[in-house]
Length: 54
Image 1 (cartoon, rainbow, N blue to C red):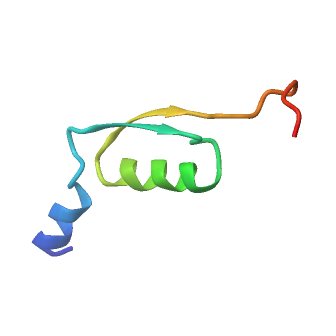
Image 2: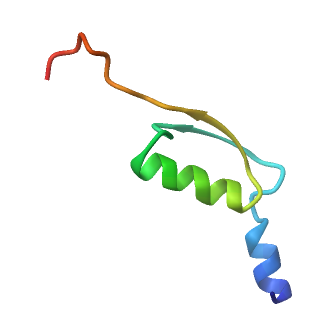
């Protein structure tokens, strides 16, 4: 690993992100990527309530 890639891999170290919809899809991918780059994550899985009509 080069010094440049090591710095890039931790560019979010010490930062906290709130990710909604983190249970699947794009939200899950974003959560994994940010965590992989050193971020702290506050993740919220958002699901449509069963009583909501489509």
